[in-house]
Amino acid sequence: MSGHMSPEEFRRHGRQVVDWIADYLAGIESYPVMSQVKPGDIRRALPPAAPEHGEPFEAVLSDLGRILLPGITHWQHPGFFAYFPSNASGPAILGDLLSGGLGVQGMLWVTSPACTELETVVVDWLAGLLGLPEHFRTDRAGGGVIQDSASSACLVALLAALHRASGGRITSDGVTRRYTIYVSSQTHSSLERAARITGLGAAGVRVVDVDPRTLAMDPGHLRALLDRDEADGAVPAMVCATVGTTSTTAIDPVPAIGELCRERGIWLHVDAAYAGVAAICPELRWLNEGVAEYADSYSTNPHKWLLTNFDCTVLWTADRAPLLDALSAMPEFLRNPATATGSVIDYRDWQVPLGRRFRALKLWSVIRWYGAEGLRAHIRKGVALAQELASWISADPGFEVHEPHPLGLVCFRPVWPGLAADEADRATMRLLELLNASGSMYMTHTRIGDRVVLRMAIGGVATERRHVEQAWEQIRWEHGALSGTLP
Image 1 (cartoon, one colour):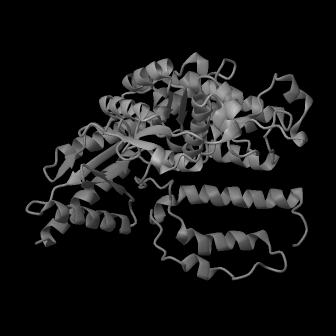
Image 2 (spheres, rainbow, N blue to C red; image 1 turned 90 degrees about the horizontal axis):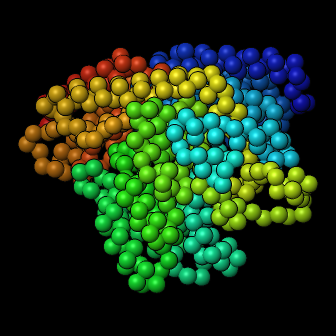
Image 3 (cartoon, rainbow, N blue to C red; image 1 turned 90 degrees about the vertical axis):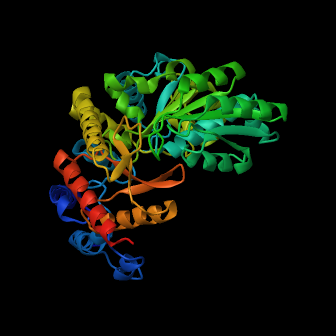
């Protein structure tokens, strides 16, 4: 077994793997959604040292089913309502396989022209499908790039923002002044990490108040913080507005925030990781409000709700110059005639790592297989099911729904009559644990105004109305049973 796998062996084992995945997806409902193993179980079941001699591939598949599968939390299960959907579809899985098969490293145009040029086409297609502004197109001043995740997109946007705010000085001299970035309490934690990575530290992050009801950023408080920092001699470098926060899908007022950024020359990054792809539906285009006029950069994740398996985040910028100036470095070993002409895109200058996978293949496969029509149908199904669920919850006196919930996430709270707030929160967490331990569904929680609420995110590829209905019945039943046992 120690030699290379021949094309014929690959053909045989490749069929076994595709069959295994097809069987897994076909029978996924038979597994508990959330893995039930204890810490260390998987490790203990595996040998402590690598094999001396090669083993047949059948042994790998056998251990996958026997040892690893119990330790998998099934993100594609129709009862997976935790976090946000992480869609994996047939065409995306096949696109990823083709990318692995070609084994391309697409750091420069010259290292595989098709890898770069297909990417420019699919990010332009997606910008068109989402109704994003023309200047985000790669044949204009801006352009799009596929990153691994929104965390990388935010970091790259921050590097470009710092380059611009410092007139290029940060890129050459490092952080020699106080630069600040502005987020809300609801902004994804990746922004604070980006501040740490770039050397601004947590001290450079300002947290703007939110509207207590909608949890959207308060532009009045943003203005006050900007005034204070500018008076103190700090340089505001970036504001991050979120369209669809992780906690509750709150939507920051991009036009009002953009107005402030415009008048002060501050970089506006719009993080629409979960919600942005929904703008593929004309009736949800309002999600883009203010983006065309004000956003210096914008990102969304096809790997959440747009049927493209992880990892695939698209970042667009209105003007690529600060981004390339912040990240471009040309060691001798990368010099080549195509780059020297300045007529090609070298995507290594648009991201943190040098190397890059051929991620455009899976997004291309998905857009071609489903078409705009199929992609819209998938988003609409998730939104419709979430709205129906919200109507059932609000009609039940035992529960309260958090408004608004315009997309595929519904946040709600069970009512526990007679219990003090902290006791009620403990009871809600107990309910969540019971539901998740049942194996038929998986949800997460968040806090709104210091109270624990449950999050139910709908949008899985296999999730149908009956799965949402079953989950709601189970939630009601467990709530009733638990209420009966409480003091």
